[in-house]
Length: 155
Image (cartoon, rainbow, N blue to C red; front, side, top):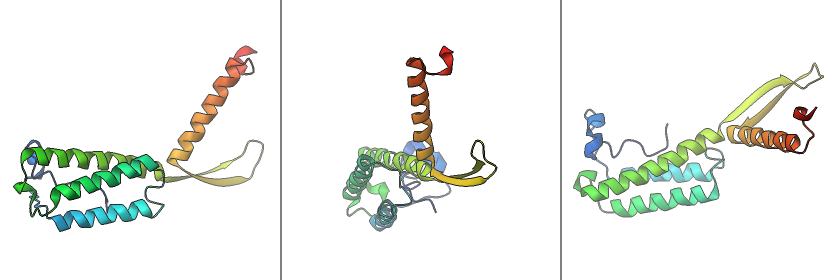
């Protein structure tokens, strides 16, 4: 189940009304509270969004709080004015962007390969973010060696 705030504004925001004609969704404060609780739980479990930075975690929680305060006492998103709908939509998009990237970066990828000079296969598992950091560090190390006259470019 996708744990981000996805569709609750589509029916209420005019520019996205075409995407939600079949699924008219009235947002009650309780519906958002349930979504928020799921997101908070996922942020706290240490697995779902393991690669999210502390600043992004704080930004998500702050934005969730801002949406909650705007929805306090609201039975349906339709009762809000356009400026409030736009602000909530923008907050929703911010949360979706942060959480989608964090979840993608936290995905575990395993590789079963042989080390150079060995016939023995080993399995190594890393998150997507760990693999990216390792690749960037290797590239940086190679560039520094080439610049210092150690690399293959200077043979």
